[in-house]
Amino acid sequence: MALAIAATFVVGVCAVNAVARIGQPFPGFFVWENLYVPAVGEPSWTGASSGLRYQSWVIEVEGRPVTDAHDFENALQGRHAGDEVSYLLEQGGERYEARVAMMTLTWRAWASVLGIYLLDALILLVAGLVVLYMKPADAAARALFYFSTNLSVYIATSADLFGPYLFRVPYFLTLNLIPLLVCRLLSHFPVGRTRSPAERRWLAILAAISIALGVVSNLAFFRNRTLLLAVDTVTHSLLAAAGLAGIVFFCWHFVRARSALVRARTQVVLLGTIGAFAPPVIALSAVFLLGVPQGNPLARRKAPEVRTFVARREPQRGGLIKMQSRIYPRCSLIQTPIRHTLAER
Image 1: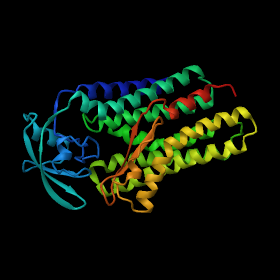
Image 2 (image 1 turned 180 degrees about the vertical axis):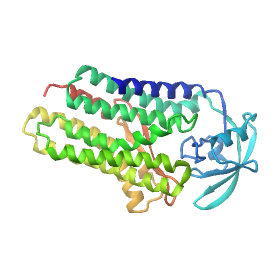
Image 3 (image 1 turned 90 degrees about the vertical axis):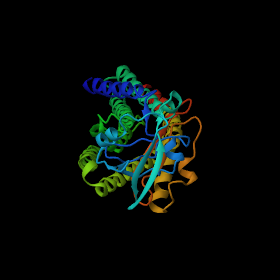
Image 4 (image 1 turned 60 degrees about the vertical axis):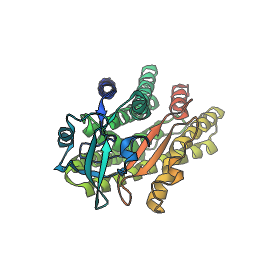
């Protein structure tokens, strides 16, 4: 119950703060608290159309050195939509200048980015709470609650990374807990099998790794860009591995299921799992193993009527990877595990 209250509070605060930005001037691009420019926004935004490169680091604003978001906001104070601002940025060791006009964050611009984050977070939070309410004593229901709630907080705090920067610490912790909670969900999912005692040991090891990665990410956020990028590579490799494990898990139990109920249950969830995790697994493998650049069409393809992810390597030639989630109608990844977790075994 404490976790549910805390998650609801965090998601609610992120939602209120995000809505408060509607109608306010902003630079035409988003920045993190450490002045990293994420690959988030629309082509029509002045940042993208002016030549500013996503996955850059802001060094100066109007010739004034800046070291964090506080300096950045002070340098822009008093500016209005339409005012052009000169920036010195750095990407991949190369410095360049860009002049970007300030914009107003309209309802449409807000909905296309922050609105999607918040809708996603709210759906996942409600899904987790419903499952916990329906079957509070069931291990599979609790596993789904932890997974949905953690993912909800991660997505909500992703929006907070663009300001006002209140939840950076839980953002990195929840991000790094995703592989653990995927594996925990698989371990408890009702497919008519007996859990092995070794699963608890492996989950404990993965929990220690996840927490350590979250702590190191937070410590390196301002201090060490190289370490931050290296930890992020490990994190998203684990995310890809967890997604692949989910696909293999449900394929295996679909083939070997002795019960028609288990086979039907596994088949439906398998399709949702493939729709959710196959795109990021393929995209991350292409980025890391084959050196495919971030603009490849494979990483941007959308699949209708499933929950999918867009994987980007940031910055180009060795930087952060962002998993941008999008929701489509009849979101099978959210609906089917709930339906079958609540079903009688």
